[in-house]
Length: 331
Image (cartoon, rainbow, N blue to C red; front, side, top):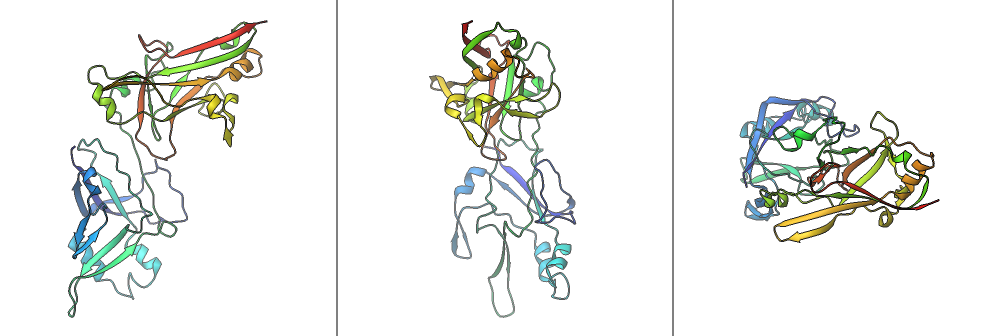
């Protein structure tokens, strides 16, 4: 595994505050001319504990900041930056940990800011004592914090299938957990289906594996669950839950489906499938009680940012077509 390089910068965001909300796509100001620390790490090695001043410390990401920054802190006085909270914030608007994206590293690092071990520690000595340390803990209820996250699909297989607007649809769909990639599904002519009673309508979505190198599918696992919703209009991104989903506060997932199911497991090559029951939605279309604006398919995660992804067959894939199976009774 290639090392992950991380730089620490002083922030340049005067209004960086705890009482403000910051979206993951909102890039905040960073003083690129002030790198005050850096580290090159292998993420899996962060599971190891370390010895600091003779004391065993729990596994954590530790980045040594420059002595110049430490001296800046020690030079502040109670009549300057240490006078009150506002003067200190003016002196230090925040710290930004920024990964080096110019180096390929297939890693996504999760850090627990709420841990009691998240802190800024200053190691120093006085005329009387040596090996002194003062720590300033991070408080998730009082310390401003934000997470900027951006995916770059340039050069990837997925990039060839993004926003193609192909009227015939794409043979491959790429689904990635938030913030990631979702797919718009159009099944034209559903409302023109004969007037029948729908007993079952099952949408099946099947994974397409890397035939040339199936081990690539083991880098990130498939999502545990996919989510299917309906568009509210022909244009725009507004969606709403399908009637088959049930009450959004207490959905009927056992009926609706969407869970990951392994349908073939040949050791290194494994294929998963997702199925949705959309019988009630289809019945509403046939009865002209709803409009067919299309469906949105996306990977579902309990986390705001996640790494799981899956490549599935579209409506015209050669072997793993997306299929809608309808069982009905003629009137």
